[in-house]
Amino acid sequence: MKNNILLISLTITLLALPNMSKAQNDKIDRARQLQMHNEIPGDVYLPADPQRQLTSPAYRFESSLFYTTQVNINSNGENILNDAANEPSMAIDPLNTGRIAIGWRQFDNVGNNFRQAGYSYTNDGGESWTFPGVINPGVFRSDPVLEADNQGVFYYNSLTSSGGNYFCRVYKSDDGGASWDLGTSAQGGDKQWMEIDKTGGLGEGHIYSFWTSYYSICYPGHFTRSTDGGDYYEECISVDGNPYWGTMAVGPDGELYIAGAGFDDGIVVVRSDNANDPDAFVAWEYYTQVDMDGAMMAGPDVNPGGLLGQASIAVNHAPGSGLGDVYVLASVARLTNGDPGDVMFAKSTDGGLSFGAPIRINDDFSNSNTQWFGTMSVAPNGRIDVVWLDTRDAPTFSPLYSALYYSYSLDQGETWSDNELLSESFDPHLGWPNQEKMGDYFDLISDNDNAHLAWSNTLNGEQDVYYGRINPVITGNSSIEAENPIIALQASPNPCRGNARLTYRLAKSAHVSIIISDILGREIANLVNETQTAGTHSIQLTDNLIGNGIFFCRLTSGKYSKTIKLVGLE
Image 1 (tube, one colour):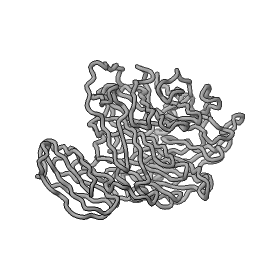
Image 2: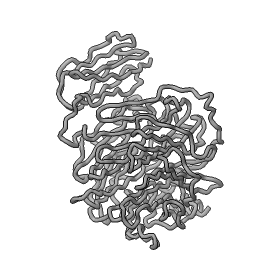
Image 3: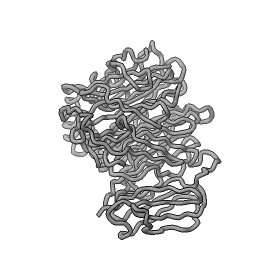
Image 4: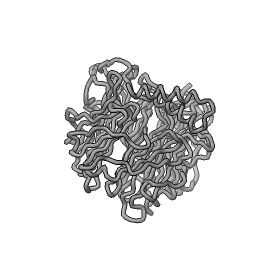
């Protein structure tokens, strides 16, 4: 294929130059990473037998800050053992926000890397989910990207690979993701992304897609659009700056932005002002290299077969001083301090022509923790939401354990809220489906009240996909104080070998008690019995406090309490 010839030629040329600059050495790394990171069929298809499936309780967690529930479940709402699911994407019906669909890479057998286009849907805002199966049983599919238009039609962009060629198909659903049509050929290639114009202007309903040029069905082209609701996708064109591993956004006037990694450090942002004109040949106004004080990476320790994360781009649609501001965010390996992964943010106030200095969102002080899968969205009122996975709470014997964190900005990214711990820590290396990764991305959609998250984790002891809903009001978006003073309680690691750290957050000062009991309810220890101030607190459990077995930790604050299960290992 042309793309393979290009990559081989590029690598040989670069290796032949011994006195390269740092940027040129980075280009070698990127070329090698691009060759390594692509979706190809590996194992043969092994169909699952529903009659022989083993199950366990599905994971579900709810607090005043965060609600999350597993979506790849059987008809009884149970977790399906020995499968795997990752790389989720989500669509929400703007006409009925209780209708949500999530798609993901579905692995029917954890020992087999053959993946398919899995999906699940809800009609009650995420309280209950239905997982009918996959769109094309037995067909290799990967890299799901879901979107919805203003009419409530859902679109599912799915990659497949055959004979060394990469191409995409987009499926449509008129019933909130419960069923899908036969799909339409949409050009495509590896690591595609999709965006729909919902501005109500000239480009209303246009569907845009781009992907990695080196793995393209129409090389050197790596962009297409549909101007007729997905019935036909135009011939491919190239994108200036050649971005990859990225996302797209549409501005208030229908201008189209693409962000992704480039062959220099940082992020490439590309803009088109006429993609919304159905009669125009799409042209690119300019592309800008954005300094993020870091580089997007493939093969990090936390996700060795995948990415540190994709580039996120979003545009502020809220009336006021921030209207039209362009925001970019990514988890990057830092250049100035050698940190393996920080969540970095940059802002443009001139339509993407220039960007300010990058800002670090994660507020830990270590240069050794990894913040990965940084993901951003912007609410209609201008609130910027960011989530990521974070190893800061990992135990010394399992330094890659990761937990979900969140932060927001109310002033166009000038300042950010304290980082909020949303989940327990988990081992991202559990349940690999015969490939060393937990996917490459999460998906986040914000409204004025909540941030909706499609994410994956191993909280159930294997890779599963989850819907999450974050309530930013509890973290300080308004002066309303939470009635329940307990925000969160978690143990990390869990399971543990007696040396877990308990972390909890209080919304207001209160008298607090923390009691550890065994499975029979007998008290093992009373760790706290005092009045404590609002904020985050932690306690390190001693090595001999809990042994092998099941224990419970109960936190009581005033008339409210929260209990979590602790699993002790020998």
